[in-house]
Image (cartoon, rainbow, N blue to C red):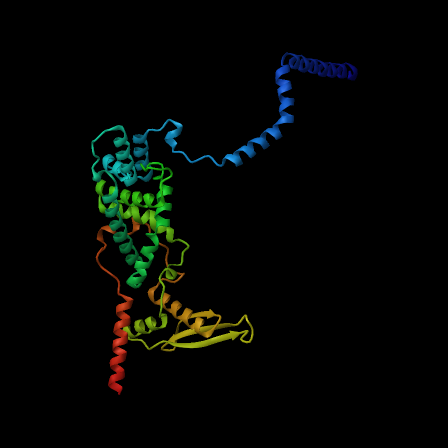
Length: 354
């Protein structure tokens, strides 16, 4: 039984080998092409890399340059991706930049067309309205989350979120770069910032200001996650501000005490200072010197007073914040005003003692 089986298997291999050879005879071109590529492919790729390096990278082109581009469909899809119902005419105006209007005017002059494009066609007015809305609702949201923080701290956080880097990054992520009608591509960061603010104003005009406020909160506040919001506000005199805060609350003046120290006679010295009020520890921090440690401890005490320390609750989403009932004009106490009142009371007390 074994011999016929082996004979059958060997015969099958012979038939398979003959069929492959017959296939290769009728497909000499394919066989030769594979062998030729195996030898010439590395030099060919090397030549391609050298030519690309010599010419430089390919310039970025707008998606419309590749065909299959429907601007109206892209505008509609933009609103649906964000979950907002836009007025198409207002949204279209939000994506027209000043440089695009100037380019259209120059091209019409070259052709000989004398019709003028109105200045209201670009997004400058919408951008100004959007900037006001962003500042108003951001500050109202921050005051709601940090009711004990001073107004200067609220303004500092708002200024951080209003920087060109943050707004341009958010605008790029929501997809405004390809929709901006600009003189050049990709558009500049300033154009992306203006467009994002114009989109916020378009939300307010298409729906309500509360919807625009929720839009701002959902897209800008997440940028604060993982950031130390207290470092955004530069304090010049933390101990003086802490003294004024404690005095306004009827508490004793702060007293700094050295908790422990190590390596005082080396370049790796470390001092740990605590701030006490009424024999209660309200803040502590390490530092390379006593002065630095005392200043950092005063900042930690202010964090605890303003309830903006690292153990604070997370930021709330727009759905959990009553934007309609927020007082947009109400402001938190001012640190500068409190310091002035504290300094005036100190000077009056010194004169009374004299």
